[in-house]
Image (cartoon, rainbow, N blue to C red; front, side, top):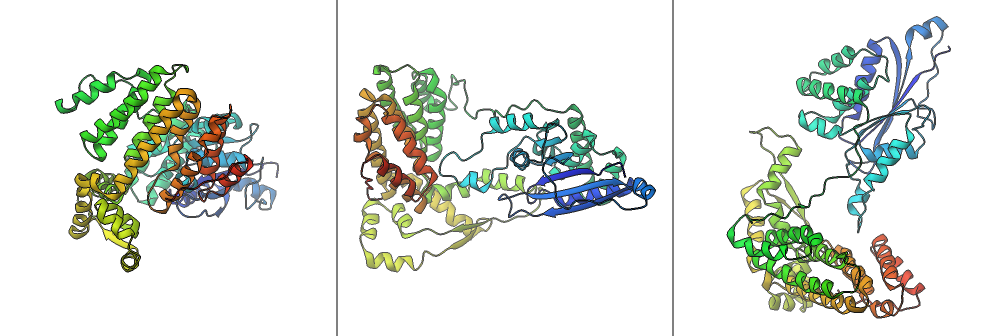
Length: 511
């Protein structure tokens, strides 16, 4: 048998219909007179790993003339795959890493969208893979590339990505099968036929065009043009103050002010701008290059810190109409279809105390007997926000934000912010770069509960080294390295090792 099988690898995430796609291809191949063998290695959960489907196709007529069946492999072999079909950009990168994509042989068909892995989402810092680098890698490895946003195509036709992948494969011409046979397979499934056929046709045309020209650069969510007029006259003074800041920092400050209003109220945005203007005054006096690096770093970090996550914020976000609309859209519920959302919540005594007025919360935390008694009632709770009782419970808690300024957690965080800004102001005069790194170090403090406490311990360990770092010419670079160590290990072990390597003592302030 001179001919060899056509070898195809599919990398699809859980829930994307990879098994349906493989079944379609088996049906199509058999209808076209091909022998087909299919195997799969399942991944874990929705986004901790993809399921790999491997298919080989061989003409039945050739096998019959040879008088024997072809020998087919059960799994793809590096350097021996004709086509890789990836449902997501990072999965294309993983296929390249495994050696399944080669410049002399492989057609790579991939979506440009990202479905972030658990590791990327749970990273303490910026854990997402660099999309620009990933796109460059994908472009450099394949003999032929088909690249476009399959998720957007599926959403536009209210379809599923498996039908888009099938259309892309058909349009690429990798398989010698008639287009009508592909369409017949979708028809025979009897499920969302009209939507699946529409997305199939759209993807087929996209594949025929080849590379979409996607650069990996996503559009910035920041508005680069500051509006001249605010949405309401009451907010115009805030906008005017932003307009007087350095142009490069205005988009970040505008988003920070919007976040402060959403989190609390316009008065809170005024406080945000008061603090920003303090840093802007430092920039004006600084002898460093006018890059506004300190102002931009502080604006980004301050906006995040001033909108820290507490029980009030969590309850507010979970009961917003926009969240219910987003969930309805994600699960593609019909207009009249009912659906429910169950929240899994486990507030600790510390979170409960943080929501109370400062005096009462301090008294609670200072009473071991009361803490022990209350901890018996803080086990995991399941609250159904689709029910009247569950919704009203969380909605009422979210409404407490009007009294947030009097809570223990707010006063603690407000004091921490002021201390942080004070240190930045002190350093900026003679150690500008170190001040910039201190502004960026706020990224260690995020989330709530134990996650927030661990981040705060690491942050305070860094702050304790500022005097030592300020005495060194490479202090800013060292602080950046210490931040990387803190982000690599939330328990602080690597950070302690890095600090010890510098010959100084790690100091942890109480959380």
